[in-house]
Amino acid sequence: MAITSAPALFISILLSLVLISSAQSCSEYTFPGNQAFNSCIDLPFLQANIHWNYIPSTRTVHIAYRANQTSTGWIAWGINPTGTGMVGSQALVAFHNSNGSLTAYPTPITSYTTSMRPGALSFQVSNISATYTNNQMSIFAVLGPLQNGTAVNHVWQAGNSVINDIPSSHATTGSNIQSMGTLNFLSG
Image (cartoon, rainbow, N blue to C red):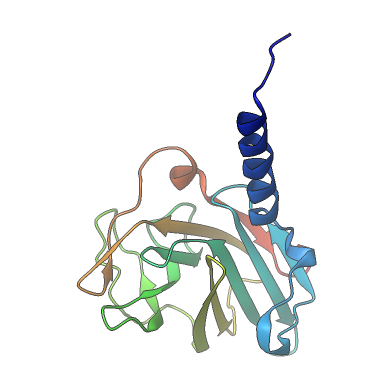
């Protein structure tokens, strides 16, 4: 049996508490400003969650994508209406720009070397905004009407830096290449 020193044990316990608090379940999270969402899922990669309210009568969805991130990094979430994976995704991105303010905008992902500059998506996006609190960045938006039903292929991503107000490339290994799935806005 290994004997652990008191400082090492303290550090181990502290790191465990940090990891537990950073992995807070989506159902336990309260957004500032009284924003409430009826549905959410904890995404399996990149310490992220997606929250939503789907409105069947208008085929629109109000989303909040939330992920752990440093103040110098960026996050993105998107729907791929034509396939799976990154290319073809219609994404929302958020980051702190060079003047320090938080920026969020839509960007179509057309290739693996995409510029992530603002652009029009294949569906309407309104009320896009972002927040940054306690090392968590969130993107809010209303999407739709959605043309392809309520089951969508979605992707989410994070990168470590922004250069000249444009997100830099994300890592191409591990969780960064696994962050995709299918989401049904009616059933979760």
